[in-house]
Length: 165
Image (cartoon, rainbow, N blue to C red):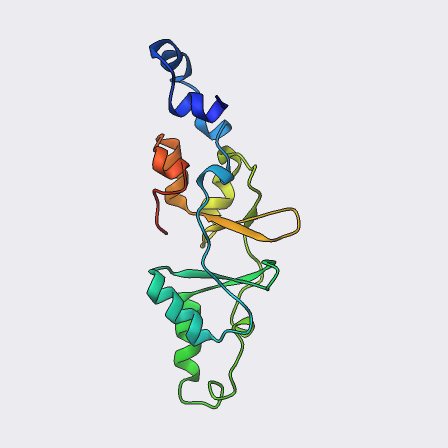
C-alpha cells in the first residue's frame, strides 16, 4: 500500500508498532485533507453570495472565473457590511459586482504541501487556505479543523469527509 495507507491502516501489530511514532505532518498533504470549496463567479452580486453562504452554513466563499481560476474571496462579514451600507442606496439597483467587495490576496497552497508546511500560513490566515493547481485553478480548501483532525489520525478527515468549515 501507499505510505498513507500503511500509516492509517497498518496490516498487523508489527507494522502498527513500527509506524506509531511517525510524524503525520511530514507524510500527509493538503490534498489528503482538502474539502470542496464553495464558490461564485464574478457576475454574481453580493446578495447572491451571502445567500449561498447562509444556505451552505459557511462564512467564506471563493470567487473564480469560468475556468476555475481563483480570483479572490469574500467573507460573510465583508458582505454583510457591504449590503447593509448599500441597502438604501442606488448601489444595489446598479447590480454591483462581487469583485468590488472581494479580497484578491488569497492564502494558497498546492495539493502536495505537507501539513507541517501549512501550520504557519494556516494559523496566520483568517480564512481557510485555498488549494490551487499550477495554473491557479481552485481545487479545494483546507480548514484548521482538518489539519488538527489529520494530526490526530482521524481517517474521515484524511479522506475529506470529516470536517465542516
